[in-house]
Image (cartoon, rainbow, N blue to C red):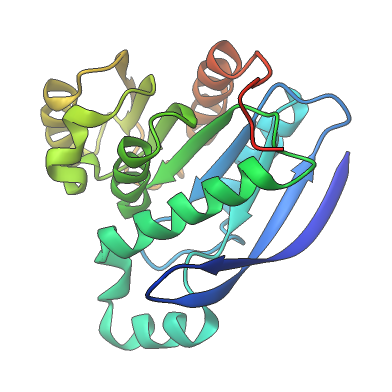
Length: 226
């Protein structure tokens, strides 16, 4: 297993930033999963890292990224606004996706997104924008409703995972299921609340995510950029 701390440069007509990321790359990979963290979280989220370790054990690479720069994180701590800027977060996921497709170690790997909370909304918007590159999406306790009209343009097979005791979010996810026009599934983890802190709840999330990604990211991508 190769583990690397990275600084990923993103360039566009409107911005130029560098994002901190952690890449875990098994010797033999069946795809790579890009994590989109939720409200107020970061690449150090213990819940997402537990899921990532489960994926690594299943020979899936992972990229955990801080979608905000340190200055933006400080601003968000004061205002709590940037975490809900779905368009900006999705744009950064698109940039990271393009970087994965051009990076030598990851260019031939199929790409999946794992989104948590508000990050799930951003992941679905990005998946709609990069339907040629994203092959699977998993949402944990997510807000897919924040993807709005982008839902119907998602082509990647999408799994929504919700805690059985997270009533309002269950309703939001059922509404999102109705809006999706791709292969889709809603899985409810009995007895779990929004953060899946109950015994075995996060383990259930890890198993569901692992099986979904393995079934959809198990072939090399042949149209990667050289």
